[in-house]
Image 1 (cartoon, rainbow, N blue to C red):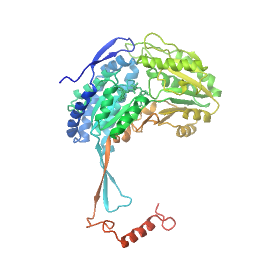
Image 2: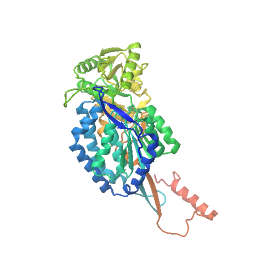
Image 3: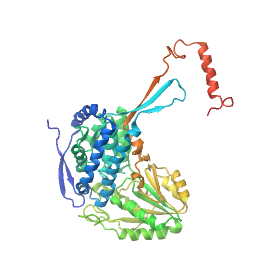
Image 4: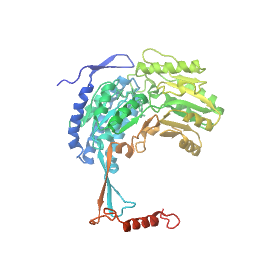
Length: 499
Ligand code: NAD
């Protein structure tokens, strides 16, 4: 039966050329795809961790062998520099596959718990897979953010349906192909291409959803998932602050600022989106940042290392960047470098000052190659402004006083913080990654990234086989009296302190 009704056109944002047409899976075809995945689940869930890990190692080897093709595909539909595809997508995914192949059993094997109260029971926790997990991914890191949830969901024993962004379906299809070529059984991983309605249909049919994308769509996904009470992981947008204190290593801070704000043309959820610099070093910091931004090379490339910044990936991003800059300039901001659209989807890397929190550029996710820098009088003021946001994904603090840096980190209302670094959290696979406030719910990576694709089941086994427990029927006064005495003995402060 032919289930596709039309196609997605895929464009290269760097050249504007149409590079492919991909069949769309309409919402009506999602239910049957989930049914196929559910059928495959019954055998996939029974495999040992070691067996599943073999597919992951094979997938890793496939990626190493096909890295040029993968980079070519990613760059053709995002326009990003090849070096960024190599590091942040290919390298990350190889590490992710190794990590979960190696550690999943340790994180998900049955756990024996020693009961605090019921000493006459044996207790263990079983991490059962959810069933069919829908992974809905964005376009900015199409390989990393698809694999980032596909891999742990598979390792936890689920079958998976990936719905890549409508802007980057070729990378989504590559994920399906790579697992097919390493022999993953049919329907354990399927990629369905389409628009938001295909993603929404996944929420209607799957047993769990991992969503990465904008706050607005994330809220829609959460609302829809609430109708079925299925678990959702939400990895949403950010407005990440960088704080530069007066004692910072200025050269490192300026380099981090430029790279953290402009890599992937600023289209990173953890991009440095606003910078707060203490007054004594403000002028010198701005001077260095402007100088470095002026030296960046923007364009298209055929070989590694020819450019530093590519285009924006779609017209919508260009419009957002221009809207935020217009608003900022109208309210008094000054552009020191950049500020203009170039040909196609290219936008000049931009630094602006005289910014404040009345401006969209300091409050809304810009997701573009823009660095707004604000002067502050103290670390406290920087902290207050950094926390004055509806987002809470990531942040960075630059200071030579690492103790102070760690102290500020604790006070930042974000899921991730770097001291004297930026964006690095995402590469730390053993620690939780995710957002607070409107930046999301749930955590990727480590055991958190696996367990969210499971439903923990607690099994309590009676050890002694009495005919009845003392507190079962029939109730009587003697037992109540005995329980009351036990209560005093166990918990009354001052008489017997157990804790
Ligand atoms: P988006 O919300 O527009 O789309 C994300 C995905 O959701 C796409 O696959 C889209 O087709 C699908 N979708 C759209 N409407 C849907 C609906 N109603 N139901 C289900 N699915 C639907 O986001 P985007 O523009 O692709 O991605 C950029 C955003 O993603 C930015 O805000 C960025 O900060 C965020 N992001 C977050 C992280 C993170 O880890 N926190 C990582 C990368 C990107």
